[in-house]
Amino acid sequence: MTEAGLQDRTAAEETELLARLRAGDERAFETLVARHYPTMLAVARHYVKTQAVAEEVVQEAWLGVLNGIDRFEGRSSLRTWILRILVNIAKTRGAREARSVPFASLAPEGDERAVEPGRFRSADDPFPGHWRAYPGNWQRLPDEALADREALDVVLSTIHQLPAAQRIVITMRDIQGCESEEICQALDVSEGNQRVLLHRARSKVRSALERHLDG
Image (cartoon, rainbow, N blue to C red; front, side, top):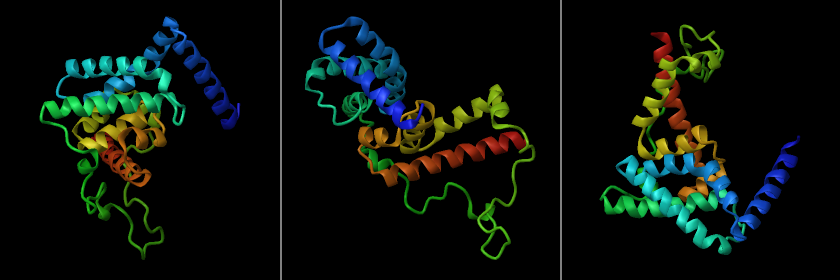
């Protein structure tokens, strides 16, 4: 199926699901929860101190979804709309815990480097901009590396230690599978800012994984 065909199918499924939700179909709501709960919990966890509070935020967000479903106008995807509700609630709860700050202020300063420039070949090199050295066992397939429990732990640990803005963007994009547009709308950030945050996060995770593979 082509990408356009897949998008049409997804849109049709969402339209059907919305109709069932508005008709009070309990199974439709269960489908929605099963589909989006993991992403919602992961996002909420970045705004509040504990898993228990994050779960409360998600439950409150679902109430907001149910109460507002008749007002959903379809200007964004249903998931984007749900995540926006979630983020607004999570920010409010985070503020009560004296922990939340505007998302844009969490972004690193413009001169932060995700990877040291010295790791790349200089302009007068036959291959300018390329990495100077790859991991010692670069020949290992990525899937094989990630299958290694220790490597996966390194990845998750590195993500956990990232600056908050980078952490939430890479979690939504690479772990939960959100589209860039969804992230921008949910977090109220520009496409350029989202792209920079994601690049920096991925670069740091890659560097940590390289160090692990090199032993």
